[in-house]
Amino acid sequence: MLALEDTTRVADYLVIASGNSRPQVRAMYEEIHARTKAAGVRHARAEGFELGWWILLDFGDVVVHLMQPESREYYDLEGLNADAKEVEWRKVALPSLPAPRARRTRESGGDARAAAGE
Image (cartoon, rainbow, N blue to C red):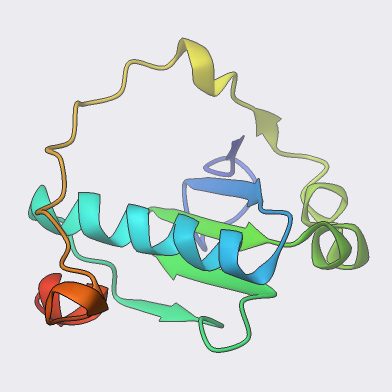
């Protein structure tokens, strides 16, 4: 996680996370979306879900990038924001998020998106 508040007006924090495959990046998005929705937090938009190579979630002050290793290396967001202070996220007190609602599988008569209320 990078603290951008002193370097840009785009956002206060930039979170960059890697998933090893398209399904894993999409699963990361689904989990973040479900947990934040359950907590009453909405992101303005998410870009890139269809391809799953790089998904961006914009929460206003926090922008989250979920990327496959190749896209992370190619776009080098850490290098582009080299002036930003790195935040040791394991030391940041995070609010607990409610567990997402149980998702129905296709076998039980619904898909995950329908169960998540989308």
